[in-house]
Image 1 (cartoon, rainbow, N blue to C red):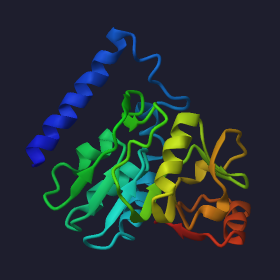
Image 2 (image 1 turned 90 degrees about the horizontal axis):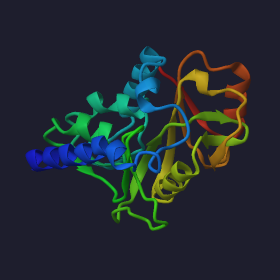
Image 3 (image 1 turned 135 degrees about the vertical axis):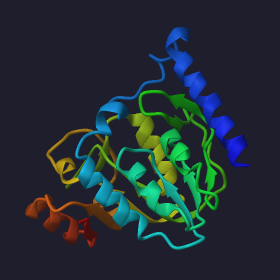
Image 4 (image 1 turned 45 degrees about the vertical axis):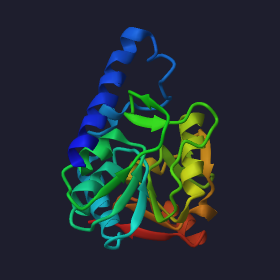
Length: 219
């Protein structure tokens, strides 16, 4: 089974790599910072946030992990928990492949090469029939207006994940708490937990706690 999944990931990556030659890449691109640039930003903080997020997972449960450079950092600490993971991220799929007890599900859709994620672009759901107690997700920014992303396609996909989860857990380093404009994925009232680092501004923490959000500071 792991070998078959690895072959599937390799095939999807090959399609993504050919996309620029076929003229598809322009259509399958998202607004915002490309993944290869974002992965190196605040790496130590993201790693600590990922560990803290993984510690919230219970053995044998099903979880959803949205694609992102911070959510990716959960993966090394999920080994041995025998989780079922629904993710739209090929980076996360690849990181989980070597974990014998981890089951991985992916939605249907198109591959967006800059972020290496799978999103539906046809207005349909594209998701397996999957419900999870926890959804782990990142953000372009987080503030009084709520959780924001740069692209409306990503917003629609994340709304479909939110509808399938009991608890929304947001993983963001403290640089994401800035005044910003963008597309609102959800307001603060829908978020249950925010995991961040010790650089979190005091005013931002007050805002989160005023909305009954549990704030976890990762060491």
